[in-house]
Length: 253
Image (cartoon, rainbow, N blue to C red; front, side):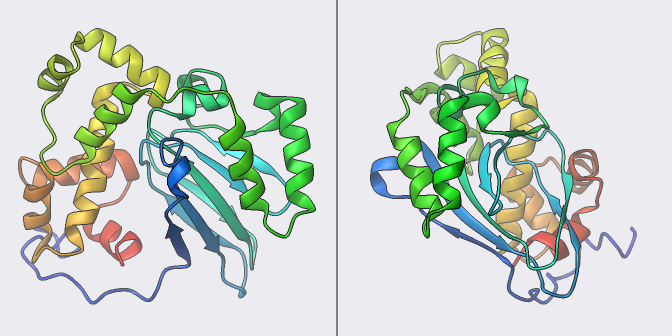
């Protein structure tokens, strides 16, 4: 086995603190907003960061433009200027389709200015954010005031697949009273891709969470629902282009 993979080895020493920080949204918005986050790039020069797929959609303010980061089926690279400060609102599973006003499969792997989706409201919102000392509060107020009905069935599906006891898709379809074909269509509408892709993405996210406390990478893989270490390597390479040990060094704090 390659030393770069190192499945039998103990976890490496934790990396320095991340420039990425998260916060919970106000209670009244938790059916629409999953997380608030910030990212501060280093002052030393431009940087390229890898963004992992997570089944979610973000509204991102870079200080000048408000844009939608559509659902990514695989990891993408983002280039950031020195000292860049991004602030994001991660929309809750099941809420993004109605809030944005279109099936999320039309935004898969895309970055789109919100004004292209919300028209005059989006342009006015960006103007208000640019003159505010609390731009994310302005954005949250707009999200709260938007006519939308979060899909509780899709929120349940996401929670089940993200949880430690994630069921197989045929069983989950039965729980929801749906056929697998209908489940795939609903997932494309609400997550940007089918249920199988969402399942793989959330299993990798489970592995990253397990890796924070597991003794070895293999232990974390089994706890996350992978059949074995080879299964983890296959999915990690297909979804991120990296082996698990690299993901651990770059993304687990």
